[in-house]
Image (cartoon, rainbow, N blue to C red; front, side):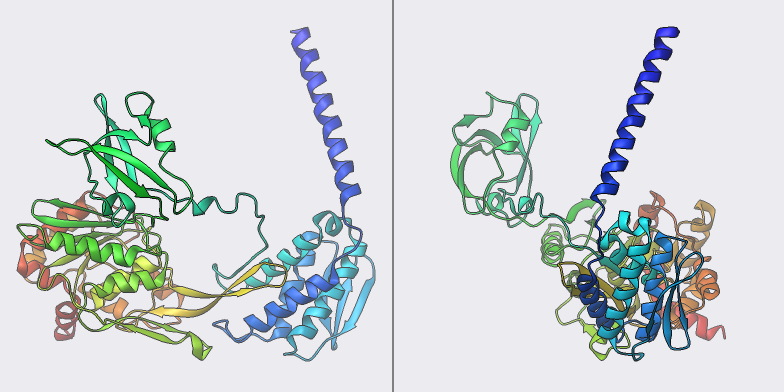
Amino acid sequence: MRPRLRFSLVRCLGVVAALVFVSAGAVQAAPRHFDTAQATQIWGTALDFTAPRILEPASISQMALWGLSGISALDPNLTVQEEQGKIVLYGPTRVLFTTPEPKPDAAFQWGAACAQVAARAFDASQELRRAGTNTVIREFFDELFNHFDPYSRYQPPTTLAGFGQGDEASLGLELIQKDDEIVVGSVAPGGPADQAGITDGMQVIAIGKVKTDQVGLAALQSLLPGMPGTKISITVRPQRSLPQRLILTREIVPQQTVFTAIRRGIGELRVTEFSDDTGSQFASALGALMADNPTPKGIIIDLRGNRGGVLRQAVLSADTLLSHGTIIRTIGRDPAANKVWRAEGADLAPSLPAVILVDGRTASAAEVFSAALADNDRAVVIGSSTLGKGLVQDVAEMPGGGQLFVTWSRMIAPRGWPLQGLGVIPQICTSLGPDSLARQLAALKSGHDLMAKAEAEARMARAPMPLAQTLTIREACPAAIGANDDFRAAETVIDDPIAYKAALIRPLLQSVSADG
């Protein structure tokens, strides 16, 4: 025991010495002066950008004082108060600095005044000096946006380390090991491999001059990516055919976000997120399903776990199933935030019943897609209440390279209800357990929807909503993680036209109206 104790003590002493050294180095390295010019530019620009855009009005002077409370967050011994037309910085025992308040809506003057206060606090506080100018600037925004919503934020300038790695091109294919052979596991639609006619399951004989029976799978995979525009040969053997040597040009291949399958005669589209290319992927995948022989008897669109993404891609995806109608509206204080997206294309699957699967993780753009198809009677939503992320941010470049994200509009579903907080309430709820689901499905088969009241309350809701009202509506179908019952319910309503029609929003709302 004694040698072990001695070894531990030596290690502890070493750690303490290292900590003392690091601490001393940190104090010595701490900047001596606050960068007043930098803070003035960033805060003034941010206040000017934010004031006309935030959903609930606040004066520039109020926002500036909220931001200055970030000084107290870094050093509780310091406080900033507004007193008789002055901004006063207090230390533990005395006033450290005062400066006259600028005019209430003079953004850049307020930015300068805040920077002056921060500079005096910096001189008086070892904690602020340890933190440095950038942290003080960031804390200003953290405290400011604490008074707004969860999504407004300041993103400081980021390091350029690793820049350009995302620009690596590929052939748009994945390799897998199958028995003793290397074969194509998947091909990205529209990528170089797809354009060359390479398909899943083809045996790969060689990549460039490297034969696939000479090296391992990981080494072969590493040969596929490279700079955009570079070429590489790949030798494949289609089934019952001679090997073919193809020359492929590497390209930036969009991430695959839409995956399809056909099960029990029903087409399934799994959308993992709405990225920059999801709209075209969704249209292509839906078209491919409709070209299948026989044509699917219905469509299931699985958005469970989909956290959203690019709003326009959700709009484009919804447009492939809508021949007319509103898809989404955004409303804010700034007139530029008010927009309406309407269906402009044609329904690629006319007359086919459609079901959308959602859960408590379904959010943002995925909620836009679900609400659009449900409100336009084009799909039945099945699952649980979704996350309820229905706010849109405007983005501004800040001096020094940072970015400001300010929430400036609410997303409003076609029937006028807000997505924020409320989320999408499914027409068929699976989160209440199997017994409740069985009762719902039995009622739908006889033309009645047990979720009708909750759906009507959700569709009549208007922004801004009291939290109590939001929670009451969501209680009808609590948020949960998707399960196998979602697919069972989807197959049931697709196979039963009476149940499907009863679950659509318009008949559902009409039944509530008829009941008084």
